[in-house]
Length: 224
Image 1 (cartoon, one colour):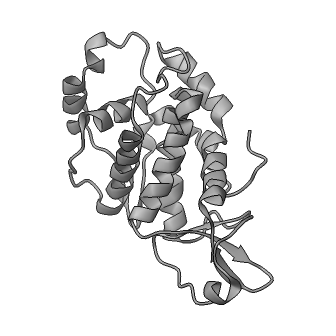
Image 2: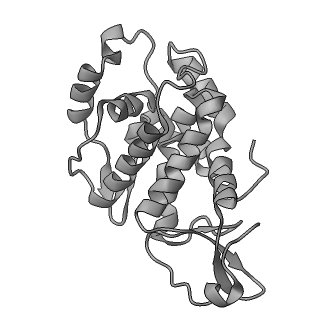
């Protein structure tokens, strides 16, 4: 995997709570990886619903969020025993692979529980900035718990779209004003120490069967 840092620089890297350590067998290391996995999880339904031409906006939004909070995507070099910083292309490969993992099952669940046809978020419907703001908001909520944070109407709409909706949902729920009221009146997550489990964001069925989200193997190119 391509890196930007040389070995001498890599040896001086000190891990932070926002860093994401990539590579097989390392996806559960550190609070940075746990929060990253939760962020990916909260983007998986959006990824399934978004048109192919806009999926990279979600990938780039996640990468920008990690960077904005001071985190880096790192790869452990076994030969040198040190970490190296991934370049943008390698980071995109890692995040894209994590988002694609479990997508067939997620798409089936969307079609079974939702009135939507896939993709239901058309190309250009949301700018990159909206996806980036959504990821930034979700990541911040992992850090501050139930504190209410400001967000735009686009983010409110993306939050609604990131859930499985029961069939027969009324059209007025799609209005941003109603979306804002619905979301503000619901708990976003429950705090569990260093990070949050957002199972209620997807509903009890997914909490009972989390396997469709768990395989966020960082950098595993074998994902579907």
